[in-house]
Length: 482
Image (cartoon, rainbow, N blue to C red; front, side, top):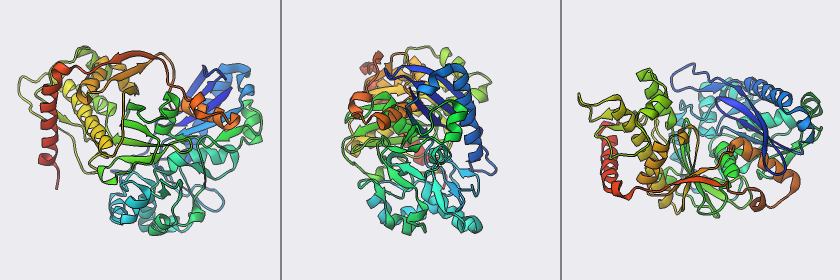
């Protein structure tokens, strides 16, 4: 058996996989996010530990003696979070999360230093880890002075599991401190942001062993003490491992709270000015490109709350057949935007409203607006040298046939749905646990799932959606706040 633990923003998922890569059981425990001030988003790392313990105990109840057969453990987690520890490994303040944008001024200041684009290959986004520490230095100096280690969320779980301060390449690439091409911490970038190398965890590949499970936890969960814990991966790289997205041309689109267009690459292909993320993958000598929009399925969830209906009811009301675009245009910038605009201050809007507009028109406009934002991401990836032959669709929004057909049509690329199964981040983490324990070739473990259905572009609608896309792009600068 192999265990994958995924530390998400809204919960922890523990998944048990056998050596034939069949999911045996899974369990989840919920988390909440604290937003004590506008633009802030935090969690208490103690809650991660409690939720992980709850999920493992539930898995123990559900899976009986299967946990005793676990040979490897993998970790996945929400990226970019700043977990600050003192010299005794005590947490100094709540973790500042990936969707916290309080450090937008500090991010802009770091991004103005050309070293960051040249070495990290990325824009310094407000959500990244480095500007968070710059904010703490300016606003909480008494905390900053005590920082002995900075850990990403899943790596704080690792510290609890193994006692080791370790991170891996895919998650570390989202800090703005990594030499992404060289796959090592950059002394120059650390120095430029007022940090030291000794404050960083050790770095390994995601498929390598990072330590062994502590005896106390092993006994509590019924797992052998010393069971190998893999380096693991950031959540999107872990999902890619679960989907077998590891070779050039492989890609996926994620329709979760945020939206992601992900392309695996066999070389380092940065283009920072496009706001494309150029990160290390979770296996050696592999990288990936990623475009991220901050509001995807969450935009439909927001509109559902406004209308007093569920997102699934709204989706059902528009049917499954894609029609010509609505005359209403929605800009999905409810939380600012990353790729390709890198603007925390962007705001959403509906335009083109008349008395004739119905709820169904606005629902379609929301889904179209998010899809147009995904198209901008694909264009940005392609401009940086990325290639995607087809996109596997994952996330809550992937349950909507209408949305999947729309994505295929607007992005002009086939969209695939995998056969029934769990191929998410926890499954990818379990695969990394298998790799760390067995030393197997990633190509033999990280296989693509069987495809249940393909959505092909509806070429008869291409011209209509190109015109609607042009309108979408023209509206952003017209309503942008100064």
